[in-house]
Amino acid sequence: DDEQQAAYHLSELIEDHAYSTYDKYLREHEAALRAAPVPPIAKKYYEDDNPFLFDLFCTVSDTAALSQTAEGDGGVELGSECPRQRPTLRSLYDVFVNVRDDEREHWKTLCNLVQFDNMEGAGGVVRSTQPSPHE
Image 1 (cartoon, rainbow, N blue to C red):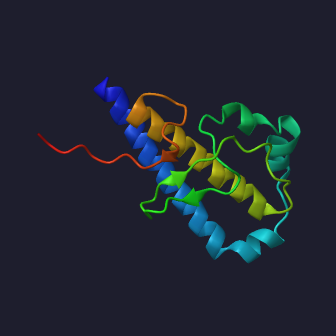
Image 2 (cartoon, rainbow, N blue to C red):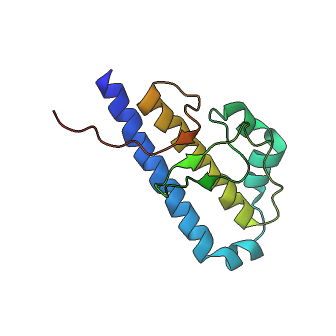
């Protein structure tokens, strides 16, 4: 229904903004984050509790290194499988990378829910939802 699609779209926008915010923070504070240790709660969540948890909730497959589409339109090219297990946490930087990547996974799932009413990847490329032209 329309309300559900609107809620998915709002969430899509929030997840995209969260990804961009974390990505910018990582670029601007990389040295300090790499020098900081991994907090015990992050190690517990990402490594001890279930290091494959992300795999269980990965609904849109892609490769370990996402690439932008050739059109440069912000779309993300998809590969054939979900990434396997999280990278080892060596510093606080790695924790933030995992959080950022979670946001991207949420964004991809929500894009597909809005555009295709399906959580799985469709069409090999995920793009932000565009407004429909008014009739």
